[in-house]
Image (cartoon, rainbow, N blue to C red):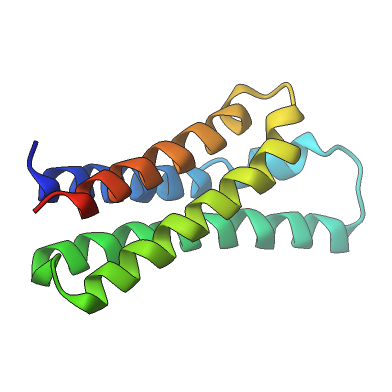
Length: 125
C-alpha cells in the first residue's frame, strides 16, 4: 500500500469530519434546550473550535505529505497529529461516546482510525 495514500486518506477523513462539525452547530446548540445565552455561546464556540481544529489537522497532514513525507519535520508533524487525535479520541470516549446521538459515537472511531492510518503510512517507505 502506498504510504502517501494512507496519509491522504487520514487527512481527508479528519478534514471531512471537521467540516461536518460546522454545519449542524445551530441544531446542536438548540438540542441543549433552554440554556443561558452565555452557555449557548460556549457550546457554539466549542463546537466550531473542534471543527476548525480537525480541519487544520487534516490540512497540515495533507500539506506535509505533499511536500516531503519522509523528512524529520514530517515525522514530527505525524507524531504530534497521532498523539492529538488519540487524546481527542479518549476525551470523546468519556464524553460524546456516552451520548445517544450516533455521530458522537463516531468521533473516537474516526480519530483513532485516522491516527492508525498515519502511523502505518509513517512506517512505510
